[in-house]
Image (cartoon, rainbow, N blue to C red; front, side, top):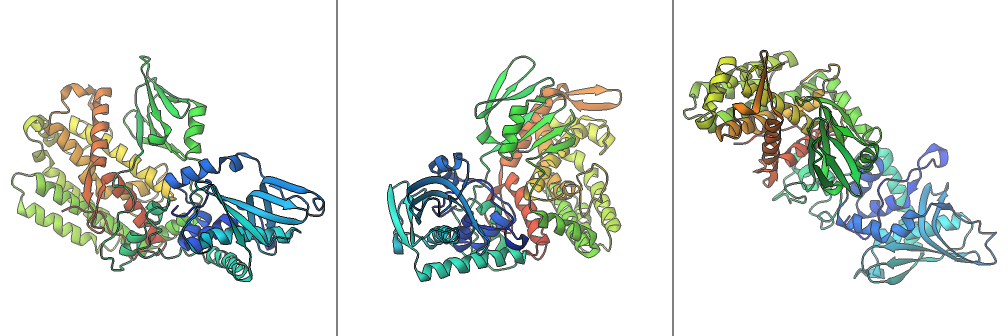
Amino acid sequence: MGHNSSTTRGVTRAAGGHGADYVPARMVNEFVYCARLAYLEWVDGEWDDNLDTIQGRWHHRRVDDEPSTPVPDAEAEADRQLSARSIMLSSDRLGAIAKLDLLEAEGRVATPVDYKRGRVPDALHRAHDPERVQLCLQGLLLRDNGYECTGGVLYFVESKTRVEVLFDDALIAMTEEAVRGARRMAASGQLPAPLVDSPKCPRCSLVGICLPDETRVWSGEHVDEPRRLVPSRPDALPLYVQAQGGSIGKDGDCLKVTTPDADVTKVRLLDVSSVALFGNVQITTPAMKALLAEGIPITLHNVSGWLSGVVNAGIGHRNVSVRIAQHRAASDADIGLGIARRMVEGKVLNQRTLLRRNLPDADPKRMGLLAMYARHAKSAPSIEVLMGIEGMAARLYFEAFSQLFRGAGGWAGEVFAANRRNRRPPKDEVNAVLSFLYAILVREVGTAVVRIGFDPYRGFLHQPHYGRPSLALDLMEEFRPIVADSVAIRMFNEGELTARDFVRRARAVSLQPMGRRRVLAAFERRLSQTVMHPLLSYSVSYRRVIELQARLLRAVLLEEAAVYRAFTTR
Protein backbone atom coordinates (compact mmCIF):
# COMPACT_ATOMS: atom_id res chain seq x y z
CA MET A 1 0.00 0.00 0.00
CA GLY A 2 1.02 3.62 -0.35
CA HIS A 3 1.65 4.25 3.35
CA ASN A 4 4.18 2.71 5.70
CA SER A 5 2.01 0.00 7.18
CA SER A 6 3.61 -3.35 7.94
CA THR A 7 0.93 -5.49 6.36
CA THR A 8 0.46 -9.22 6.47
CA ARG A 9 -1.65 -11.39 4.22
CA GLY A 10 -5.12 -12.12 5.53
CA VAL A 11 -7.40 -10.32 7.95
CA THR A 12 -7.80 -10.96 11.67
CA ARG A 13 -11.40 -11.43 12.72
CA ALA A 14 -12.72 -12.55 16.09
CA ALA A 15 -16.04 -12.75 17.86
CA GLY A 16 -16.61 -9.48 19.70
CA GLY A 17 -19.20 -8.02 21.98
CA HIS A 18 -22.80 -8.91 21.19
CA GLY A 19 -21.59 -11.42 18.58
CA ALA A 20 -20.12 -8.72 16.30
CA ASP A 21 -16.65 -8.97 14.77
CA TYR A 22 -13.87 -7.05 16.45
CA VAL A 23 -12.31 -4.33 14.28
CA PRO A 24 -8.62 -5.16 13.73
CA ALA A 25 -6.36 -2.22 14.55
CA ARG A 26 -4.72 -2.55 11.14
CA MET A 27 -8.12 -2.07 9.48
CA VAL A 28 -8.67 1.11 11.51
CA ASN A 29 -5.34 2.30 10.12
CA GLU A 30 -6.58 1.50 6.60
CA PHE A 31 -9.94 3.18 7.25
CA VAL A 32 -8.24 6.47 8.17
CA TYR A 33 -5.97 6.13 5.13
CA CYS A 34 -8.70 5.11 2.65
CA ALA A 35 -12.13 3.79 3.59
CA ARG A 36 -12.47 1.93 0.28
CA LEU A 37 -9.20 0.10 0.89
CA ALA A 38 -10.35 -0.91 4.38
CA TYR A 39 -13.64 -2.25 3.03
CA LEU A 40 -11.95 -4.25 0.27
CA GLU A 41 -9.50 -5.85 2.70
CA TRP A 42 -11.66 -6.33 5.79
CA VAL A 43 -15.18 -6.89 4.45
CA ASP A 44 -14.46 -8.31 0.98
CA GLY A 45 -11.30 -10.19 1.96
CA GLU A 46 -9.38 -8.85 -1.05
CA TRP A 47 -5.60 -8.92 -1.12
CA ASP A 48 -2.78 -8.39 -3.57
CA ASP A 49 0.94 -7.90 -3.13
CA ASN A 50 3.22 -5.20 -4.41
CA LEU A 51 6.79 -4.22 -3.58
CA ASP A 52 5.73 -2.23 -0.50
CA THR A 53 3.76 -5.08 1.06
CA ILE A 54 6.50 -7.62 0.32
CA GLN A 55 9.13 -5.37 1.88
CA GLY A 56 6.79 -4.70 4.80
CA ARG A 57 6.50 -8.42 5.53
CA TRP A 58 10.27 -8.80 5.30
CA HIS A 59 10.92 -6.05 7.86
CA HIS A 60 8.07 -7.40 9.98
CA ARG A 61 9.04 -11.07 9.73
CA ARG A 62 10.42 -11.38 13.26
CA VAL A 63 7.06 -10.44 14.75
CA ASP A 64 4.97 -12.37 12.23
CA ASP A 65 6.95 -15.59 12.71
CA GLU A 66 6.31 -15.61 16.45
CA PRO A 67 3.03 -17.12 17.72
CA SER A 68 0.56 -14.64 19.18
CA THR A 69 0.42 -14.57 22.98
CA PRO A 70 -2.29 -13.10 25.22
CA VAL A 71 -1.60 -9.83 27.00
CA PRO A 72 0.15 -10.42 30.35
CA ASP A 73 -1.92 -9.72 33.44
CA ALA A 74 -1.26 -6.16 34.56
CA GLU A 75 -1.53 -7.03 38.27
CA ALA A 76 0.90 -9.96 37.94
CA GLU A 77 3.48 -7.76 36.19
CA ALA A 78 3.10 -4.82 38.56
CA ASP A 79 6.54 -5.20 40.16
CA ARG A 80 8.80 -5.97 37.17
CA GLN A 81 9.85 -4.86 33.73
CA LEU A 82 8.42 -6.56 30.68
CA SER A 83 9.39 -6.76 27.01
CA ALA A 84 7.22 -9.07 24.90
CA ARG A 85 6.50 -9.50 21.20
CA SER A 86 3.37 -10.51 19.26
CA ILE A 87 0.94 -9.66 22.05
CA MET A 88 -2.71 -10.16 21.14
CA LEU A 89 -5.29 -8.13 23.03
CA SER A 90 -8.87 -7.00 22.58
CA SER A 91 -11.59 -4.93 24.19
CA ASP A 92 -15.34 -5.53 24.34
CA ARG A 93 -15.87 -1.83 25.09
CA LEU A 94 -14.12 -0.73 21.90
CA GLY A 95 -15.03 -3.82 19.89
CA ALA A 96 -11.45 -3.89 18.61
CA ILE A 97 -8.50 -6.27 18.51
CA ALA A 98 -4.79 -5.78 17.86
CA LYS A 99 -1.55 -7.69 17.64
CA LEU A 100 1.21 -5.59 19.19
CA ASP A 101 4.61 -5.83 17.55
CA LEU A 102 6.30 -5.12 20.87
CA LEU A 103 5.06 -4.33 24.37
CA GLU A 104 7.43 -2.56 26.75
CA ALA A 105 6.17 -2.23 30.33
CA GLU A 106 7.52 -1.17 33.67
CA GLY A 107 5.08 -2.25 36.30
CA ARG A 108 1.62 -1.27 35.12
CA VAL A 109 2.91 1.50 32.82
CA ALA A 110 2.91 0.11 29.26
CA THR A 111 4.23 1.41 25.95
CA PRO A 112 3.22 -0.20 22.65
CA VAL A 113 5.86 -0.19 19.91
CA ASP A 114 4.72 -0.52 16.29
CA TYR A 115 7.19 -1.27 13.49
CA LYS A 116 6.95 0.62 10.19
CA ARG A 117 8.76 -0.30 7.00
CA GLY A 118 9.95 3.07 5.72
CA ARG A 119 11.66 6.22 6.94
CA VAL A 120 10.36 8.86 9.29
CA PRO A 121 7.97 10.95 7.15
CA ASP A 122 8.24 14.70 6.76
CA ALA A 123 4.88 15.31 8.40
CA LEU A 124 3.31 16.96 11.40
CA HIS A 125 4.05 14.88 14.53
CA ARG A 126 6.72 13.04 12.42
CA ALA A 127 4.05 10.46 11.60
CA HIS A 128 0.90 10.21 9.51
CA ASP A 129 -2.54 10.01 11.09
CA PRO A 130 -3.27 6.37 10.11
CA GLU A 131 -0.16 5.15 11.95
CA ARG A 132 -0.84 7.38 14.96
CA VAL A 133 -4.44 6.17 15.19
CA GLN A 134 -3.39 2.52 14.97
CA LEU A 135 -0.84 3.01 17.74
CA CYS A 136 -3.30 4.96 19.89
CA LEU A 137 -5.84 2.15 19.53
CA GLN A 138 -3.23 -0.26 20.84
CA GLY A 139 -2.78 2.05 23.82
CA LEU A 140 -6.55 2.18 24.47
CA LEU A 141 -6.68 -1.62 24.32
CA LEU A 142 -3.88 -1.77 26.88
CA ARG A 143 -5.84 0.58 29.14
CA ASP A 144 -8.91 -1.64 28.87
CA ASN A 145 -6.73 -4.56 29.91
CA GLY A 146 -5.56 -2.90 33.15
CA TYR A 147 -2.44 -1.03 32.07
CA GLU A 148 -1.62 2.66 32.27
CA CYS A 149 -0.70 3.94 28.83
CA THR A 150 -0.11 7.59 27.92
CA GLY A 151 1.91 7.16 24.73
CA GLY A 152 3.55 4.77 22.30
CA VAL A 153 6.43 4.47 19.87
CA LEU A 154 6.57 4.14 16.09
CA TYR A 155 9.83 2.49 15.02
CA PHE A 156 10.76 3.26 11.41
CA VAL A 157 12.96 0.42 10.22
CA GLU A 158 14.64 2.11 7.27
CA SER A 159 15.82 5.14 9.28
CA LYS A 160 16.22 3.13 12.53
CA THR A 161 14.39 5.84 14.43
CA ARG A 162 11.91 5.77 17.30
CA VAL A 163 9.17 8.39 17.15
CA GLU A 164 7.21 8.94 20.36
CA VAL A 165 3.46 9.52 20.05
CA LEU A 166 1.51 11.12 22.89
CA PHE A 167 -2.03 9.86 23.36
CA ASP A 168 -3.67 13.24 23.98
CA ASP A 169 -7.41 13.94 24.02
CA ALA A 170 -7.52 14.92 20.34
CA LEU A 171 -5.80 11.73 19.17
CA ILE A 172 -7.96 9.57 21.43
CA ALA A 173 -11.13 11.19 20.06
CA MET A 174 -9.89 10.68 16.48
CA THR A 175 -9.12 7.03 17.24
CA GLU A 176 -12.45 6.24 18.88
CA GLU A 177 -14.34 7.90 16.02
CA ALA A 178 -12.25 5.92 13.50
CA VAL A 179 -13.22 2.65 15.22
CA ARG A 180 -16.90 3.65 15.13
CA GLY A 181 -16.59 4.75 11.50
CA ALA A 182 -14.96 1.48 10.45
CA ARG A 183 -17.76 -0.49 12.11
CA ARG A 184 -20.45 1.66 10.43
CA MET A 185 -18.73 1.17 7.08
CA ALA A 186 -18.63 -2.61 7.48
CA ALA A 187 -22.24 -2.78 8.68
CA SER A 188 -23.46 -0.69 5.72
CA GLY A 189 -22.57 -3.39 3.22
CA GLN A 190 -21.74 -0.59 0.76
CA LEU A 191 -18.30 -0.28 -0.79
CA PRO A 192 -17.14 3.33 -0.30
CA ALA A 193 -16.56 5.45 -3.38
CA PRO A 194 -13.01 5.59 -4.75
CA LEU A 195 -10.69 8.47 -4.00
CA VAL A 196 -10.58 11.18 -6.67
CA ASP A 197 -7.19 11.68 -8.35
CA SER A 198 -5.45 10.81 -5.09
CA PRO A 199 -1.66 10.44 -4.84
CA LYS A 200 -2.32 7.50 -2.52
CA CYS A 201 -3.58 5.33 -5.37
CA PRO A 202 -0.45 4.66 -7.49
CA ARG A 203 1.42 2.76 -4.75
CA CYS A 204 -1.61 0.99 -3.27
CA SER A 205 -1.33 -2.79 -3.60
CA LEU A 206 -5.07 -3.08 -4.27
CA VAL A 207 -5.21 -0.51 -7.05
CA GLY A 208 -5.79 -3.25 -9.64
CA ILE A 209 -8.81 -4.44 -7.63
CA CYS A 210 -10.11 -1.04 -6.52
CA LEU A 211 -9.69 0.54 -10.01
CA PRO A 212 -10.47 4.08 -8.76
CA ASP A 213 -10.46 5.94 -12.09
CA GLU A 214 -12.02 3.07 -14.02
CA THR A 215 -14.87 2.83 -11.52
CA ARG A 216 -15.60 6.53 -11.90
CA VAL A 217 -15.67 6.15 -15.72
CA TRP A 218 -17.98 3.12 -15.49
CA SER A 219 -20.34 5.01 -13.18
CA GLY A 220 -20.75 7.74 -15.79
CA GLU A 221 -18.64 10.32 -13.99
CA HIS A 222 -16.50 12.54 -16.21
CA VAL A 223 -12.79 11.77 -15.88
CA ASP A 224 -10.47 13.88 -18.05
CA GLU A 225 -7.78 11.22 -18.43
CA PRO A 226 -8.01 7.96 -16.47
CA ARG A 227 -4.65 7.04 -14.96
CA ARG A 228 -3.20 3.67 -15.90
CA LEU A 229 -2.29 2.65 -12.38
CA VAL A 230 -1.55 -1.00 -13.16
CA PRO A 231 0.90 -2.38 -15.75
CA SER A 232 -0.55 -2.98 -19.21
CA ARG A 233 0.51 -6.61 -18.93
CA PRO A 234 0.52 -8.74 -15.76
CA ASP A 235 3.93 -9.99 -14.62
CA ALA A 236 2.79 -13.54 -13.84
CA LEU A 237 1.60 -15.85 -16.62
CA PRO A 238 -0.14 -19.23 -16.83
CA LEU A 239 1.87 -22.45 -16.81
CA TYR A 240 0.51 -25.02 -19.28
CA VAL A 241 1.59 -28.67 -18.88
CA GLN A 242 0.34 -31.03 -21.57
CA ALA A 243 3.07 -33.70 -21.86
CA GLN A 244 1.18 -36.93 -21.16
CA GLY A 245 2.77 -38.70 -18.20
CA GLY A 246 4.45 -35.51 -17.04
CA SER A 247 4.50 -34.25 -13.46
CA ILE A 248 4.81 -31.05 -11.46
CA GLY A 249 6.75 -30.96 -8.21
CA LYS A 250 8.15 -28.30 -5.90
CA ASP A 251 11.79 -27.32 -5.63
CA GLY A 252 12.31 -24.46 -3.21
CA ASP A 253 10.46 -21.41 -4.54
CA CYS A 254 10.07 -23.03 -7.96
CA LEU A 255 7.78 -25.48 -9.67
CA LYS A 256 9.68 -28.33 -11.31
CA VAL A 257 8.05 -29.76 -14.45
CA THR A 258 9.29 -33.19 -15.49
CA THR A 259 8.33 -34.85 -18.79
CA PRO A 260 8.35 -38.61 -19.51
CA ASP A 261 11.64 -38.03 -21.39
CA ALA A 262 13.18 -36.78 -18.12
CA ASP A 263 13.37 -33.19 -19.36
CA VAL A 264 13.16 -30.82 -16.41
CA THR A 265 11.97 -27.20 -16.44
CA LYS A 266 11.88 -24.94 -13.40
CA VAL A 267 9.53 -21.97 -13.10
CA ARG A 268 9.46 -19.55 -10.19
CA LEU A 269 6.17 -19.46 -8.27
CA LEU A 270 6.44 -15.67 -8.47
CA ASP A 271 6.09 -15.88 -12.26
CA VAL A 272 3.01 -18.17 -12.28
CA SER A 273 -0.56 -16.83 -12.35
CA SER A 274 -2.27 -20.20 -12.81
CA VAL A 275 -1.46 -23.80 -13.71
CA ALA A 276 -3.29 -25.77 -16.42
CA LEU A 277 -2.98 -29.56 -16.53
CA PHE A 278 -4.04 -31.29 -19.76
CA GLY A 279 -4.91 -34.98 -19.63
CA ASN A 280 -2.62 -37.37 -17.76
CA VAL A 281 -0.41 -34.94 -15.85
CA GLN A 282 0.38 -35.40 -12.15
CA ILE A 283 1.01 -32.79 -9.46
CA THR A 284 2.60 -33.48 -6.07
CA THR A 285 1.02 -32.50 -2.77
CA PRO A 286 3.86 -30.06 -1.87
CA ALA A 287 3.46 -28.33 -5.23
CA MET A 288 -0.30 -28.10 -4.79
CA LYS A 289 0.07 -26.70 -1.27
CA ALA A 290 2.55 -24.09 -2.48
CA LEU A 291 0.19 -22.99 -5.26
CA LEU A 292 -2.84 -22.81 -2.97
CA ALA A 293 -0.85 -20.89 -0.34
CA GLU A 294 -0.13 -18.24 -2.97
CA GLY A 295 -3.73 -18.21 -4.21
CA ILE A 296 -2.73 -19.62 -7.62
CA PRO A 297 -5.56 -21.64 -9.20
CA ILE A 298 -5.02 -25.04 -10.81
CA THR A 299 -7.26 -25.94 -13.74
CA LEU A 300 -7.80 -29.50 -14.93
CA HIS A 301 -8.53 -30.22 -18.61
CA ASN A 302 -8.98 -33.22 -20.85
CA VAL A 303 -6.46 -33.69 -23.66
CA SER A 304 -8.63 -31.63 -26.02
CA GLY A 305 -8.53 -28.71 -23.62
CA TRP A 306 -12.08 -28.74 -22.24
CA LEU A 307 -12.19 -27.56 -18.63
CA SER A 308 -12.90 -30.38 -16.15
CA GLY A 309 -12.44 -28.52 -12.87
CA VAL A 310 -10.70 -25.77 -10.92
CA VAL A 311 -8.74 -26.09 -7.68
CA ASN A 312 -8.67 -22.83 -5.69
CA ALA A 313 -7.24 -21.81 -2.35
CA GLY A 314 -9.58 -22.73 0.51
CA ILE A 315 -13.24 -22.75 -0.46
CA GLY A 316 -13.03 -19.87 -2.90
CA HIS A 317 -13.35 -16.12 -2.65
CA ARG A 318 -14.59 -14.88 0.72
CA ASN A 319 -16.75 -12.08 -0.65
CA VAL A 320 -20.19 -13.66 -0.60
CA SER A 321 -21.86 -10.34 -1.46
CA VAL A 322 -20.65 -10.66 -5.07
CA ARG A 323 -22.25 -14.09 -5.43
CA ILE A 324 -25.45 -12.93 -3.74
CA ALA A 325 -25.68 -10.02 -6.19
CA GLN A 326 -24.87 -12.33 -9.11
CA HIS A 327 -27.60 -14.85 -8.27
CA ARG A 328 -30.10 -12.07 -7.58
CA ALA A 329 -29.38 -10.46 -10.96
CA ALA A 330 -29.48 -13.80 -12.78
CA SER A 331 -32.92 -14.45 -11.26
CA ASP A 332 -34.20 -11.02 -12.29
CA ALA A 333 -35.40 -11.22 -15.89
CA ASP A 334 -34.77 -7.53 -16.58
CA ILE A 335 -31.27 -7.25 -15.06
CA GLY A 336 -29.99 -10.56 -16.39
CA LEU A 337 -31.41 -9.95 -19.86
CA GLY A 338 -29.91 -6.45 -19.96
CA ILE A 339 -26.42 -7.84 -19.26
CA ALA A 340 -26.85 -10.69 -21.76
CA ARG A 341 -27.97 -8.24 -24.47
CA ARG A 342 -24.76 -6.25 -24.14
CA MET A 343 -22.64 -9.40 -24.32
CA VAL A 344 -24.27 -10.60 -27.54
CA GLU A 345 -24.12 -7.12 -29.04
CA GLY A 346 -20.39 -7.00 -28.32
CA LYS A 347 -19.80 -10.42 -29.85
CA VAL A 348 -21.65 -9.58 -33.07
CA LEU A 349 -19.87 -6.23 -33.43
CA ASN A 350 -16.49 -7.93 -32.96
CA GLN A 351 -17.42 -10.58 -35.54
CA ARG A 352 -18.29 -7.79 -37.96
CA THR A 353 -14.99 -6.02 -37.24
CA LEU A 354 -12.96 -9.19 -37.85
CA LEU A 355 -14.62 -9.75 -41.24
CA ARG A 356 -14.34 -6.10 -42.23
CA ARG A 357 -10.62 -6.04 -41.41
CA ASN A 358 -9.70 -9.31 -43.10
CA LEU A 359 -12.03 -9.91 -46.04
CA PRO A 360 -10.52 -8.71 -49.34
CA ASP A 361 -13.93 -7.44 -50.42
CA ALA A 362 -16.28 -7.20 -47.46
CA ASP A 363 -19.84 -7.81 -48.61
CA PRO A 364 -21.80 -4.63 -47.70
CA LYS A 365 -24.99 -6.66 -47.30
CA ARG A 366 -23.33 -9.04 -44.83
CA MET A 367 -21.82 -6.13 -42.89
CA GLY A 368 -25.20 -4.41 -42.79
CA LEU A 369 -26.98 -7.52 -41.55
CA LEU A 370 -24.43 -8.04 -38.76
CA ALA A 371 -24.84 -4.41 -37.69
CA MET A 372 -28.61 -4.95 -37.70
CA TYR A 373 -28.31 -8.10 -35.56
CA ALA A 374 -26.17 -6.14 -33.07
CA ARG A 375 -28.89 -3.47 -32.82
CA HIS A 376 -31.61 -6.08 -32.43
CA ALA A 377 -29.62 -7.75 -29.67
CA LYS A 378 -29.83 -4.53 -27.62
CA SER A 379 -33.62 -4.76 -27.54
CA ALA A 380 -34.28 -8.51 -27.56
CA PRO A 381 -37.41 -9.19 -25.44
CA SER A 382 -36.17 -12.51 -24.01
CA ILE A 383 -33.14 -14.76 -23.65
CA GLU A 384 -34.66 -17.14 -26.21
CA VAL A 385 -34.98 -14.39 -28.81
CA LEU A 386 -31.48 -13.14 -27.95
CA MET A 387 -30.02 -16.62 -28.47
CA GLY A 388 -31.80 -16.76 -31.80
CA ILE A 389 -30.23 -13.47 -32.87
CA GLU A 390 -26.82 -14.69 -31.73
CA GLY A 391 -27.29 -17.88 -33.74
CA MET A 392 -28.30 -16.05 -36.93
CA ALA A 393 -25.32 -13.70 -36.61
CA ALA A 394 -22.96 -16.65 -36.04
CA ARG A 395 -24.30 -18.44 -39.11
CA LEU A 396 -23.78 -15.35 -41.25
CA TYR A 397 -20.29 -14.84 -39.80
CA PHE A 398 -19.11 -18.42 -40.35
CA GLU A 399 -20.49 -18.45 -43.90
CA ALA A 400 -17.73 -15.97 -44.75
CA PHE A 401 -15.13 -17.41 -42.36
CA SER A 402 -13.46 -19.64 -44.96
CA GLN A 403 -12.61 -16.56 -47.05
CA LEU A 404 -10.31 -15.31 -44.28
CA PHE A 405 -7.78 -18.09 -44.94
CA ARG A 406 -5.39 -17.01 -47.68
CA GLY A 407 -1.87 -17.81 -48.81
CA ALA A 408 -0.45 -20.68 -46.77
CA GLY A 409 -3.83 -21.07 -45.10
CA GLY A 410 -5.80 -21.55 -48.32
CA TRP A 411 -6.09 -25.30 -47.77
CA ALA A 412 -7.60 -24.66 -44.31
CA GLY A 413 -10.20 -22.37 -45.86
CA GLU A 414 -11.16 -25.10 -48.30
CA VAL A 415 -11.72 -27.73 -45.60
CA PHE A 416 -13.67 -25.26 -43.45
CA ALA A 417 -15.85 -24.29 -46.39
CA ALA A 418 -16.71 -27.96 -46.87
CA ASN A 419 -17.60 -28.55 -43.22
CA ARG A 420 -18.55 -25.14 -41.78
CA ARG A 421 -18.49 -24.75 -38.00
CA ASN A 422 -18.79 -28.12 -36.25
CA ARG A 423 -17.66 -29.69 -32.97
CA ARG A 424 -17.91 -32.71 -30.67
CA PRO A 425 -15.89 -33.95 -32.39
CA PRO A 426 -14.36 -31.46 -34.87
CA LYS A 427 -14.39 -32.86 -38.40
CA ASP A 428 -11.56 -30.75 -39.83
CA GLU A 429 -8.37 -28.96 -38.86
CA VAL A 430 -9.82 -25.45 -38.51
CA ASN A 431 -12.64 -26.63 -36.28
CA ALA A 432 -10.16 -28.62 -34.18
CA VAL A 433 -8.13 -25.45 -33.58
CA LEU A 434 -11.21 -23.33 -32.89
CA SER A 435 -12.53 -25.87 -30.36
CA PHE A 436 -9.16 -25.98 -28.59
CA LEU A 437 -8.89 -22.19 -28.54
CA TYR A 438 -12.43 -21.78 -27.19
CA ALA A 439 -11.63 -24.30 -24.46
CA ILE A 440 -8.53 -22.45 -23.25
CA LEU A 441 -10.36 -19.12 -23.57
CA VAL A 442 -13.05 -20.51 -21.24
CA ARG A 443 -10.24 -21.39 -18.85
CA GLU A 444 -8.75 -17.89 -19.02
CA VAL A 445 -12.10 -16.20 -18.40
CA GLY A 446 -13.13 -18.81 -15.82
CA THR A 447 -10.07 -18.26 -13.63
CA ALA A 448 -10.68 -14.50 -13.81
CA VAL A 449 -14.31 -14.73 -12.65
CA VAL A 450 -13.43 -17.14 -9.83
CA ARG A 451 -10.56 -14.92 -8.69
CA ILE A 452 -12.90 -11.92 -8.51
CA GLY A 453 -15.49 -13.81 -6.47
CA PHE A 454 -18.17 -14.94 -8.93
CA ASP A 455 -19.90 -18.29 -9.15
CA PRO A 456 -18.69 -19.48 -12.59
CA TYR A 457 -21.71 -21.76 -13.03
CA ARG A 458 -24.42 -19.07 -12.93
CA GLY A 459 -24.62 -16.98 -16.07
CA PHE A 460 -26.96 -14.53 -17.73
CA LEU A 461 -26.92 -15.59 -21.39
CA HIS A 462 -26.05 -19.26 -20.91
CA GLN A 463 -28.58 -20.76 -18.56
CA PRO A 464 -27.58 -23.11 -15.71
CA HIS A 465 -26.66 -26.61 -16.80
CA TYR A 466 -24.86 -29.24 -14.74
CA GLY A 467 -21.09 -28.84 -15.04
CA ARG A 468 -21.24 -25.92 -17.49
CA PRO A 469 -19.29 -22.75 -16.51
CA SER A 470 -22.11 -20.52 -17.76
CA LEU A 471 -20.70 -17.17 -16.57
CA ALA A 472 -17.30 -17.90 -18.12
CA LEU A 473 -19.06 -18.77 -21.39
CA ASP A 474 -21.02 -15.49 -21.15
CA LEU A 475 -17.98 -13.29 -20.66
CA MET A 476 -15.91 -15.04 -23.32
CA GLU A 477 -18.47 -14.34 -26.07
CA GLU A 478 -17.13 -10.88 -26.91
CA PHE A 479 -13.57 -12.29 -27.02
CA ARG A 480 -14.23 -15.26 -29.31
CA PRO A 481 -13.71 -13.33 -32.59
CA ILE A 482 -10.95 -10.94 -31.53
CA VAL A 483 -8.89 -13.46 -29.57
CA ALA A 484 -9.62 -17.10 -30.50
CA ASP A 485 -10.75 -16.71 -34.12
CA SER A 486 -8.00 -14.18 -34.80
CA VAL A 487 -5.34 -16.59 -33.50
CA ALA A 488 -6.64 -19.45 -35.68
CA ILE A 489 -6.69 -17.32 -38.84
CA ARG A 490 -3.20 -15.98 -38.29
CA MET A 491 -1.67 -19.38 -37.51
CA PHE A 492 -2.99 -20.99 -40.69
CA ASN A 493 -2.27 -17.99 -42.91
CA GLU A 494 1.32 -17.67 -41.67
CA GLY A 495 2.02 -21.39 -42.00
CA GLU A 496 2.45 -22.01 -38.27
CA LEU A 497 0.09 -24.97 -38.57
CA THR A 498 0.25 -27.59 -41.30
CA ALA A 499 -1.47 -30.92 -41.89
CA ARG A 500 1.34 -32.64 -39.93
CA ASP A 501 0.11 -30.96 -36.73
CA PHE A 502 -3.15 -32.93 -36.81
CA VAL A 503 -4.26 -36.51 -36.49
CA ARG A 504 -7.43 -37.96 -37.99
CA ARG A 505 -9.28 -40.77 -36.25
CA ALA A 506 -12.47 -42.07 -37.84
CA ARG A 507 -14.31 -38.86 -38.74
CA ALA A 508 -12.68 -36.71 -36.05
CA VAL A 509 -9.63 -34.44 -36.27
CA SER A 510 -7.51 -33.39 -33.30
CA LEU A 511 -4.26 -31.56 -32.69
CA GLN A 512 -0.99 -33.41 -32.19
CA PRO A 513 0.96 -32.49 -29.00
CA MET A 514 3.33 -30.22 -30.94
CA GLY A 515 0.35 -28.57 -32.62
CA ARG A 516 -1.28 -27.89 -29.25
CA ARG A 517 1.98 -26.39 -28.04
CA ARG A 518 2.08 -24.03 -31.01
CA VAL A 519 -1.54 -23.01 -30.48
CA LEU A 520 -0.93 -22.32 -26.79
CA ALA A 521 2.09 -20.17 -27.66
CA ALA A 522 0.09 -18.20 -30.23
CA PHE A 523 -2.80 -17.80 -27.78
CA GLU A 524 -0.41 -16.37 -25.17
CA ARG A 525 1.08 -13.99 -27.71
CA ARG A 526 -2.40 -12.71 -28.52
CA LEU A 527 -3.32 -12.21 -24.88
CA SER A 528 -0.07 -10.28 -24.37
CA GLN A 529 -0.77 -7.88 -27.25
CA THR A 530 -1.92 -4.44 -26.16
CA VAL A 531 -4.99 -2.66 -27.44
CA MET A 532 -6.42 0.80 -26.82
CA HIS A 533 -9.35 0.44 -24.44
CA PRO A 534 -12.30 2.33 -25.97
CA LEU A 535 -13.69 3.52 -22.63
CA LEU A 536 -10.54 4.03 -20.58
CA SER A 537 -8.38 5.52 -23.35
CA TYR A 538 -5.19 3.70 -22.42
CA SER A 539 -3.48 0.60 -23.82
CA VAL A 540 -3.73 -2.72 -22.01
CA SER A 541 -3.17 -6.33 -22.96
CA TYR A 542 -6.08 -8.55 -23.95
CA ARG A 543 -5.46 -10.57 -20.79
CA ARG A 544 -5.89 -7.43 -18.70
CA VAL A 545 -9.00 -6.50 -20.71
CA ILE A 546 -10.62 -9.82 -19.76
CA GLU A 547 -10.03 -9.03 -16.09
CA LEU A 548 -11.32 -5.47 -16.52
CA GLN A 549 -14.53 -6.77 -18.13
CA ALA A 550 -15.07 -9.18 -15.25
CA ARG A 551 -14.52 -6.37 -12.76
CA LEU A 552 -16.89 -4.13 -14.72
CA LEU A 553 -19.55 -6.84 -14.39
CA ARG A 554 -18.84 -6.96 -10.67
CA ALA A 555 -19.24 -3.17 -10.46
CA VAL A 556 -22.59 -3.39 -12.28
CA LEU A 557 -23.90 -6.07 -9.92
CA LEU A 558 -22.75 -4.09 -6.86
CA GLU A 559 -24.34 -0.93 -8.32
CA GLU A 560 -21.06 0.92 -8.79
CA ALA A 561 -21.63 1.06 -12.55
CA ALA A 562 -24.86 1.76 -14.37
CA VAL A 563 -24.56 -0.65 -17.28
CA TYR A 564 -22.36 -3.44 -18.59
CA ARG A 565 -20.50 -2.44 -21.76
CA ALA A 566 -18.95 -5.15 -23.90
CA PHE A 567 -15.38 -4.68 -25.08
CA THR A 568 -15.34 -3.95 -28.81
CA THR A 569 -12.60 -2.98 -31.24
CA ARG A 570 -12.90 -0.75 -34.26
